Length: 347
Image (cartoon, rainbow, N blue to C red; front, side):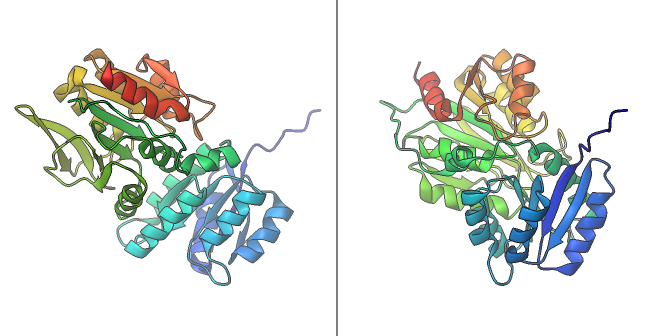
């Protein structure tokens, strides 16, 4: 008789709060597909338990005693790369720190349970992310995707094109790579990255320091202009609108679409409607199917479209769904996304 292999995802929880460790352990253990193999109150104990327990996924707080989470994460990614999900508070300081952790190699970030974010919501989201990233390809190559590329693209002239980009798990690193290649006069760009509120502010600020284009968190009524990237704020949808020849964005509250807010689907559908053939859409690494049908809608309305390939995606979920439904005109490696966008804009 064959012995069944345990296919549960093994998780190690690292957090200095005993209450948080207990809550996460209890809630995650309710899912039959997850096994919490241990917890650790600080990075030193976590290091020993990683060696002893060989977890598939690590959840990590960023503000801990003895060694901060970012220093630990940098060491971990150098010596023992593995999928790490940051579980952080929603404070502005925490948001900035979480961005540093993502830059250091964490694949995703969620908020700790709090007054506006229930334990049920947080743990349901965390379960999905744990399962999605458990098979993620974490390596030195994947980590370096967030570093500034060596080559810089240029455009001979500014066009009236619009770039619309959607990403989720692994997207922080991917977007950092892509946007750092944009020339200063790149077409106005709209980005939806699945991320909680507060974190998108820090993310936009960090990108603005790294890129030659101006990057900011979108506000309702912002114009879409060459040389500027608008990041959808966490907890709100961002839609393209048009007044005469001028494009601007609407930032609106609303229900989740494809289980997400902000939703790539919402952005892409609005771009299909108001920009049509003037748009180029790109769907990058991420779990789920958000944006796949919206990208198809863009293509059907004359837009050019691309999807990130499986080999360079940390999680090949959203691009896979877009490719499967015929939404992607081109499938390219992360290293070629910016180049492909610029080429399509200048054709």
